[in-house]
Length: 403
Ligand SMILES: Cc1ncc(COP(=O)(O)O)c(C=O)c1O
Image (cartoon, rainbow, N blue to C red; front, side, top):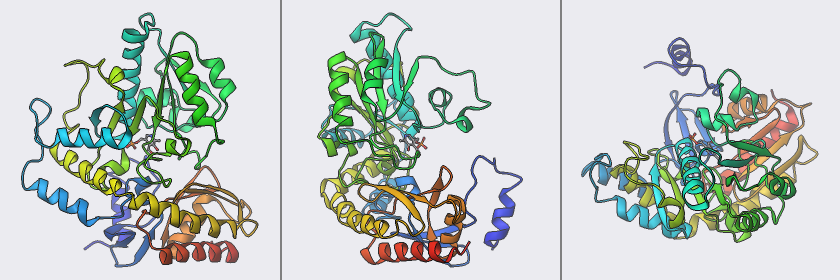
């Protein structure tokens, strides 16, 4: 058996260097805990960027996957499969929308929504051919395809990848006046994250999401909410837009929809929007496969209990209180909603990366973003005791500067 150090070295010549992972090699996991090759245990305070909202290997999800593995795994959409109708019904009901376009990764859901919004603009709104625009927010993160990086404002995501897809307008996030000024008769949609995750858990002012809803309704363009990271319980509600009682025209889901087992994403929308797609115009070999549908349906069943949303709210209070106590003691400030926080570390103490490495040595896994910010997004199943332990370890690392 190769050691962690050997496995990390073995990756170097054969694996593309598009990530800079923390030097931990995970081999097993259960709930909120993972174990490395040598048997060291770590508390997972990142949860696969919210793909593991229900923890690692949640028994109900593992059971649903096992059951499906024994029946049928893949058909392609050339045929129907007996799991897809229930999956689409449950996702539509969960979001309060009408129709579902099943895909696999988050980026695919975003790409698909861009195509659907453009087609809707031409067929329903009457925008002249090839003139449709989509308004997005600065500092967005929606994925990594060529079209998606075309409207990123992060130079490291774009440099070297041009030429870019036209048809996007970028406005500052959380600025309704700028949004209104960018919308015109060519606008197919406004695409935003209800909370900007990769940007450092940036939460807009109260009223922003309601404002986006009113503005898009008034000007006759679609509101697309990318809930791929913010959705499915993370913020204490099923969707982050629910904090402002808003129903977008299109909701994008991913990450946790696959229960931490398989990639499952979806474009969920009003009928008027998704009905623009006709056979042959869009697709995916794996989208809506029976294994994904079975796991996705089990995920929706978990969310229907309300237990995970409640847990995110309750534990979220603990997280907020714990972080408040650290402000001025190594923490410059933080933003939190539910079990999700972006924590700005005093740069005098260390970079986000250095703090993440120190926490790793103390048995806590987090991920830095943008300089001195670390992101906390533990599984929603985390116990109060484990959460307190993570906060007190953070306190120790910041106090002792044990870098
Ligand atoms: C808001 C948002 N949209 C889209 C994506 C892309 O998802 P994926 O990595 O599955 O393509 C992410 C990933 O972090 C995300 O946070």
